[in-house]
Length: 382
Ligand SMILES: Cc1cc2nc3c(=O)[nH]c(=O)nc-3n(C[C@H](O)[C@H](O)[C@H](O)COP(=O)(O)OP(=O)(O)OC[C@H]3O[C@@H](n4cnc5c(N)ncnc54)[C@H](O)[C@@H]3O)c2cc1C
Image (cartoon, rainbow, N blue to C red; front, side, top):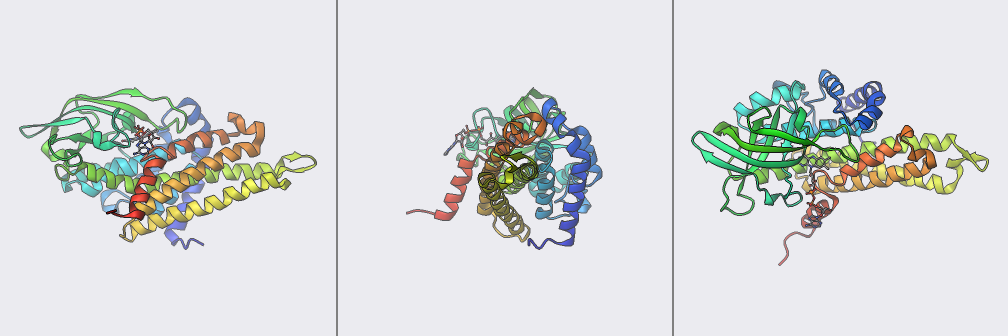
């Protein structure tokens, strides 16, 4: 129905088999311990999943955006934490360098990231600047030969396990609110960079979410990403792209919870028949299936637009908004289908519910997606 290419079908089959074999047995431990799944990342690197959309010449798999989305969908069906770490590494940790970096930066950082020898992180959000990232307070002060960066970043995925970080900082405080900001590529080991806190959280608990501080970090001129004053613009483009990945993650989480609910509803009996034969339960399953199909159409369509080099901002926001909100409905109702058992950790659907919530927040909340979509559909007024 989706007319996938042979390569895309092969990626789905390979990642599905890998996720069942390697990730499913560890998913509950990753959630309960909150430990970053290092071993899973090593195995994903072996399989070539750490750099799907980057050219082979730069260490990647030379795949398209849809292949990447399919891989994230399949991993999310079994482990949201691993999926978020991989999505952030690819779309946020490596993509900015690939899209906007100099050839020198690309050659240095993209191949090891794409091969999975190193991990990338991305710092836009700050304690005082989330949805409104133009409020960035981290500063980069010009010094001979480079910059000194001071400030902090909140919620940086992969930060404590990262080797490279791309961050925004104010370079031109008197310029307008967006051109004040530039972006920089930093080695995570550089002096002055401290992972001050690893956050404990509701879901995607094995993904690494950190508060990071920067104290007079010396950054050479060559590590300015692209042009001075364009960091905010670059990061917004990165988020457009990343939303396809978060949409795919939400889709996979919804599928994982739905499949468990469907299987359970056929087995569990109440009032002399399988609960699936009770219309109230059957209708919940029908609504889950409809939304999953719709979410898949939206996510794949956004990926295909991007792959065709066409505008995809609105479609990526729509895909992320719909898929993440449907993942919340599906995971909530999957718990309902399992009744009391759905509430127990052992049956795992409650983990999907907790993991899915992140998809309505990360890379722009649902409210921000509605702002993006409404601006696109309404256009300029007056
Ligand atoms: C697990 C996790 C991983 C993350 N990973 C990263 C990462 O790797 N890198 C990174 O930079 N950030 C990351 N984030 C941060 C994430 O992108 C922000 O949390 C998100 O953009 C919202 O920002 P905020 O938390 O500051 O909320 P706020 O911006 O303070 O928003 C609070 C509430 O107000 C609403 N709101 C704000 N403005 C408006 C408006 N104009 N109209 C209507 N409602 C509005 C929001 O929708 C929300 O409901 C991560 C977050 C989490 C939870």
